Amino acid sequence: MSLSHSALEKLATFRANNTRASQETFKNASTVLKSFKRLGDDGWAVLEQLFLASVDVGRLDVADECLRQLGKQFPDSPRVDVLTGIRMEATESPDVVLEYYAQLLDADSANAAIWKRKISVLRRTGKIEKAVEELSQLLDTFYTDVEGWLELADIYTSCNQYIPALQALSHVLLLAAQNPFYQLQFAETAYTAGDIPLALKAFLVAVEMSERDLSDKSPPVGISVRAWLGVKLCSRRLLLNSSPSASNTVVPKNLHLIEELATERVLGVYSSKSSSTRAPEGRDVVVGWVGDR
Amino acid sequence: MSSNNAVSLYLDPQIRDWVLFPITLVMILVGILRHYVMVLLQTPPKSLPRAALREQRALTRSQVLRATSANSPIPPTYYKSISRHLSEAFDAGTYLKDGPPKEGDTPKMPPNPMTDPAAMDGMMSGMKTQMVMMVPQMVIMGWINFFFQGFVLIKLPFPLTLGFKSMLQRGIETTDMDVRWVSSLSWYFLNFFGLNGLYRLILGGDNSADSSRDMTASPFGAQAQAPGQAQDYSKLFKAEKDNLEFSEGIYSWVGEGVEDRILRRYGKI
Image 1 (cartoon, each protein chain N blue to C red):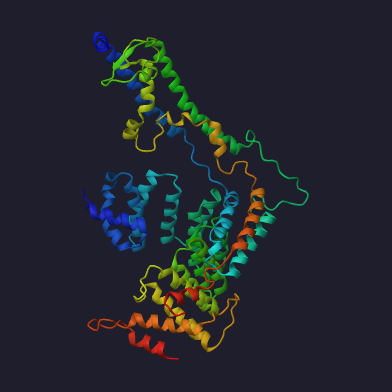
Image 2 (tube, rainbow over the protein chains, first blue to last red; image 1 turned 135 degrees about the horizontal axis):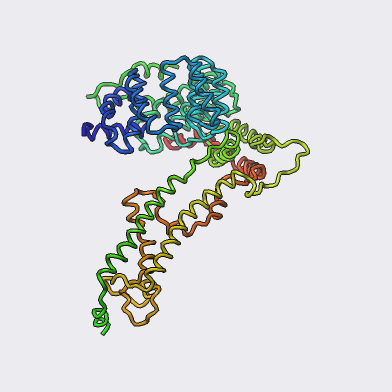
């Protein structure tokens, strides 16, 4: 077998985690093209992966070969239709691709994968209004699509429409209530929208979620550092002047205590306990900013 | 005494070559054939149009909202706006496949499954499965009954209690034969229920060769479970509206008092 076992395993991990490492995928999988039949049913999945990777790195000749093989094996597969669309997007003009997608959607109006491709083409070509309209319709039908809601929030954010973005993110929170990253994104969007009390609360929730398993005295790690910085930022601004809240969120009573705690936690990250190791990068800036009133 | 009896009974090796092996072989081959016929008969699942899918999935929206309402991740204004919007939509019937009902419309009767082509399809596929299962088994059983009735085919290499007599010696009405002898009809039944493992080995995990599995499933039972058939969504939506109101009663935001929880955790208050 020309493919080593570890390469196949790596490809399978990429597939499972939805990793986009296209260059590496391409390198590992391009030997498959001749011998994929020996892999059995797994070979087709590898072939699809290789197709996407080779479009990504611009090797359209390899992509065409993959597509030909897949099309031969699965003549009427909607999944191959999507791949054909992606291949067309690489070289054809957007109008031709949109025409192709419209044709497929006519045949099966509930084909979510094609529908999403269409939206992405619309967004890419600058037809933001149309994209938002289509995406809202998609989400009205397929409510549980977390990625769709995130995309909608992203589009709104890129147009400075923070309140609609918050609404889209609130659906994300409902659908994936266990993910602190989304809570953090919600908090940051609320901060950008100018709803500081809401942002403070959301940052605190993110802190609570991400530090649940942390032992009491250890400094924050990972995203809770960012959340604590957010808490610090919000509480300082609220101490200076009370800002209105579009969502009528009440400002917490013991704001001073929160501010103190946030300062303590943020400095906890940046004060190196063991003097032998180098101080974390950007320490002076952070300490200066925290100490600055 | 009984061991003497058992030894005194000799089977013609011709029975082994011309009855035992053929029955087993025929059953295996019929199972494999059945698997491939099923693959041919299978109609691809019909894709629903967009509006029907939307109607079917509208309930998940409020279910997702209600699932976390006692400790909701979203602040009150957002929760209320979603909840109100949904209950208004359910009330007005926005999510119904054919749009909101008009004034003076008579309430629709649930469609008769015999006249509704979509429901008919589901029933037909159930019937087809059933046919493919029943016909070959009936033919084999008739064949065995006609040619090999009363044959003793094989002697099990282990002793059994008398309770197994009716299972292993079907078609032979004797009282004093050792239970270890197996009759032709019983051999058929043993194969019928026991070949599943072999099929799994030959055809892979989810094959449709095993006929004993869908003995229990009747075509009409399958039809009743099929989702979305003759469901009255407008009634479901009305009920869901009440559920939404209940959940709004128990709603609380997870951000409520989060600052106190965190301050307490770090010993500040």
